[in-house]
Amino acid sequence: MRFRTTSADGTRAVAAALAPLLRPGDVLLLSGDLGAGKTVFTQGLAAALGVVEPVTSPTFTLAQSYQGRMRLHHLDVYRLDNLGEVLDLDLPELLDDDAVVCVEWGEVVIGELPRDFLRVRIRLADPGESPDIRIFEADLIGPSWHDRADSLAAAWHFADSFPVPPC
Image (spheres, rainbow, N blue to C red):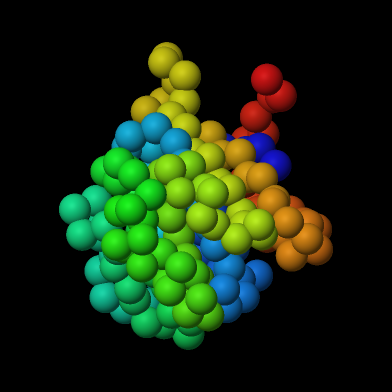
């Protein structure tokens, strides 16, 4: 799945549209350029899950948890240097918490993730395009996400008004 948004509100809307499809224990791996909108995406998701407190980047705290209709763990593992730090973060415990887990820069810990997750890549538009455009690529990893592929495509249908040509 590839599409684009044209504003931060559009990025939040994409995440909010995903929320009804989420199940306890789901993992979202968010990757992309610095400043591409990983935290903005998580803010939209949190709001759709009923989180009322402000959602901020966990860059320095590494992990933050929020309570809505489902618990949400928001991790930023950009600064982790080794697997020992992942264990210090208690990642296995967070993954077993029946919460939705959003992991920014998740490639760092991909070997520690369950074999079933949604990878959302967000990148900035090419130079010369609007600086507000974000390009999304979603990869469904594992049977649980493949079972929801049609529902996910339907949830994100509004973003297809700005399709991205294949690479």
